[in-house]
Amino acid sequence: MNGNVIKEKSFRFAVRIVILCKYLKTEKREYILSKQLMRSGTSIGANVRESQNAESKADFIHKLAIAQKEADETLFWLELLKETDYITAEEFRSLESDASELLKLIRSIILTTKKNK
Image 1 (cartoon, helix red, strand yellow):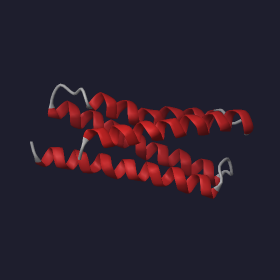
Image 2 (spheres, one colour):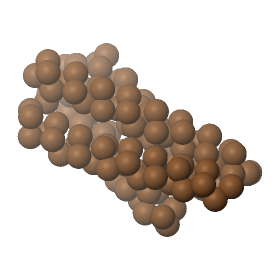
Image 3 (tube, rainbow, N blue to C red):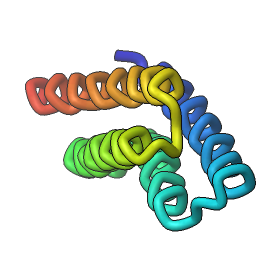
């Protein structure tokens, strides 16, 4: 897997999360959940970016493992926002699809890297 693909996808996802959080704060007056979503949703890309400059394979895997956990946490916050009617089912599906794709890509990269140790 080309590292640039995950880097680009995670950055685009972070942009979508920032836009959603701005919407939640201004239109829905929701501050607590959106703050958590902002933190985890943008952390995915930040950790992917850090992994690109890893000092070793172990460091690379560690950074991606953090990104994996953040992606899973982001899915939790998105599900909670949907179930509490802060976002529509359609908004959820689109973001959930992207977050799940990132999670699968990250897991695949981690497994491949471990196999090639």
